[in-house]
Image (spheres, helix red, strand yellow):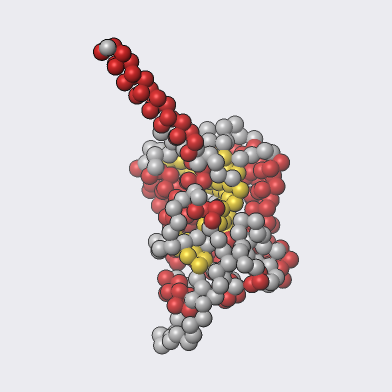
Length: 328
């Protein structure tokens, strides 16, 4: 009888262990020991914070820095490399295919965060699209790359005629290139073209890729370390606000979404990522104040209206990946 009970207990423990393993596989989580991954460009604001987030979770990180990146961030990365054994820094140029291959060697994933530190004009649009193509092609030629997490923008989805007549704007939506050119929305056009180019090549090369379409990024030091990109995003802010598609995201939440997009094997396609839609005058003023001194309000500013603009953006897909939050 004792032997029978002992066998039953052992079988039960075995079954519980098996069930736990099956549950883990269903959830699509990564193994306990995080792999080596690459972040390119780690010298811009979002890339830097992704590097920090990955390191804090135990990843080994290849931080690929472009020349001419944000000087303060590059210095921080250099200081981190001296103290952090799991951080390896590479020089890279998105137009130099070989330099990308060197940074990717030995990596299981790429977090691609392309952004111009000098702002955006019509020339930068084509440059960023060409860079995206080079990066994706390099991934296709690198053994071991399991997934690309491509950092994009909500501006790649919200700019077109008559968007105010649409009830829901979700991941199926794309900005209209001609409309962006007409209004000289170079940031939006760059994000649209580079993401579309990346998707076209990724599908052709049968690569596993997801994109995270972020709202206006807010966080520590953003006005000092990411000023031109921030102002480029805000080109046409009044129209975005009136159309209910002006939204922001906290950089720490954005980083978590990027990492979850990699770790969860069930992720696919695009993910809108934001914490809050700015659709009241009070929220707009609060946003402007958080971006001081990039944006300044008159010292005697008074609220003039109580209009509430309809929210058109949705995070239904994102909510299935991470718990929803609207706090900042």
